[in-house]
Length: 267
Image 1: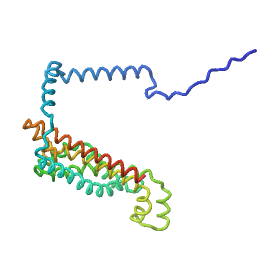
Image 2: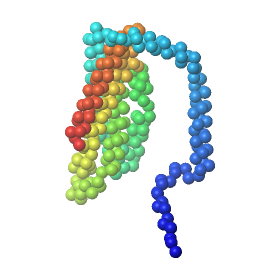
Image 3: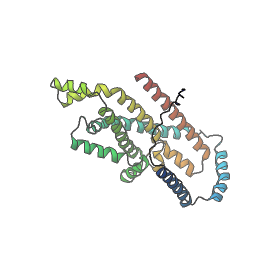
Image 4: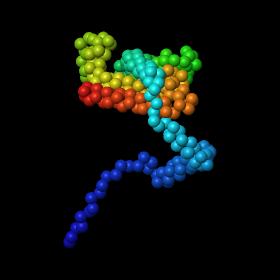
């Protein structure tokens, strides 16, 4: 009597929605919403087609780029760099107490609630909207841009650093408390050594982001090279606009290389 070997069964990850009927309903609902959103936006195909020649003409008028006003371009770039470095220096320092307060394993509940509320609020609005508010409050210029990037930096670094603190090895913290160390000693010798490499990486990453954002905030009047770019487009000086864009690309690429180099060295 021969016994037929059973075919090996392969494990499959269970679906997110167990019921096939609910899965099909969810898929149909998603497709229906996408169709509704497309129709609600009133997409005008004729307008799209008519805009292509204008876009081609604008691109043609950008070539060759005009670097004759390089001093104006350089001033804008330097202001953006100053905004990014200054805001990062302030933001990453202020993010430390916020991150400590937002970590459940080292902060009391009331402080945790306050810091988490700040992080959530600071991350709710994009930088451009925050910059518009500060421009209205403090006027045009780099000061509004710096305040915007400081708020964004504290929310970003504070959230990720708090999650890193919550994931530390509790044994080292308990060992420090067993020696009689106070809260500050626990933070300096029990928490900081475990999160310092991650914190340095976050600082470099946030600087990279601030360099990019500082080139955009000027469009709403918050200083930097973005203001120069906006004015060049408003005056139809497209060749100068291309020169500004190329300079921004060069700065971003250098910042990307620098951040990658530093992160590789601290691993």
